[in-house]
Length: 212
Ligand code: AMP
Image (tube, rainbow, N blue to C red):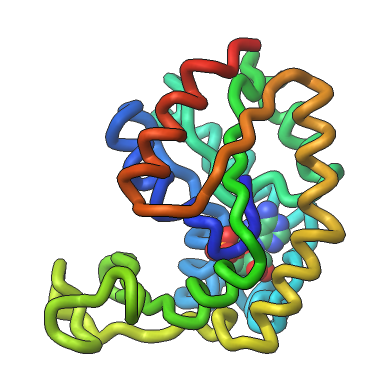
């Protein structure tokens, strides 16, 4: 968990390698649906463009379907879901049906001005998904992906006015979930500032500490 720009995606990619489990980014799944213009993508497009949450039922069905795939049987890392209490309750039901439960919640804490700085400088490769930042993680050739040569773009929802709305939605709807998971004894909050490596180290320590 963590606000937009906290580094969830960057860290999740590292964590999935380390743990050998799939990384389920609901934002990525939704962006794929938009690109492919599926019925879900058509519905989600406008909502995502203004920084609001896609309706709970649609998102939870997407997650339930993905969790039923065989590669999730040995565990999985959820990134960007649940994002409100209703989704958290639905996740508990989905997992109960699979004989599983949430066993760790890692939350990254980052100051609002740092989030805005990170998001406004963020560039992504639409071909392979690699992420860059104009100042802190520039590509070798400006505007070109180091990994695949794709042309880097700014996500539509990383524009300043949409970032503000995403942060508002996070504070209003998602941050109350921290309390929910704190009460369940599952939450480990950590400082999400500093280098990618130092945050990865803290996350690793957090994984050791949370024991349900
Ligand atoms: P992200 O890539 O996690 O920043 O998500 C990008 C956008 O996808 C969000 O601003 C929402 O519009 C939508 N989205 C991602 N995850 C969820 C979720 N769990 N519930 C509703 N909408 C979501």
